[in-house]
Length: 131
Image 1: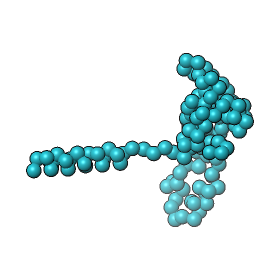
Image 2 (image 1 turned 180 degrees about the horizontal axis):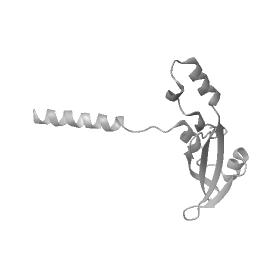
Image 3 (image 1 turned 120 degrees about the horizontal axis):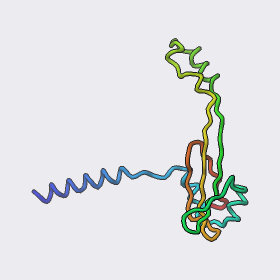
Image 4 (image 1 turned 90 degrees about the vertical axis):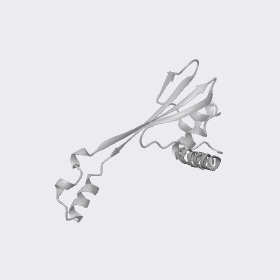
């Protein structure tokens, strides 16, 4: 009976921990597809980086930035007009327009991409051709 209970507890714990693993986002999968690409291949699709920095050791960082200005005041005002709620219950329209900024960073070692990640929101990575 004791070994059955231990086995049950072990199975439950394994199930709980495996269910908690996070899958990669679509954008991270796209960025990871660039690992192994040459710097020339990266630049041919992405263009010149907005800036470059020295990374850890002899790594170079290619940093691509983008920003999107979103002005949804008309949409929010339309929601107010179509609802029976008062303006006070709606999101403050002075929050618009707002800017969403993204930074995509590629780590290069000996002119090969060895890693990539993004910071911010609204990132739209370019797919690697043939992948």
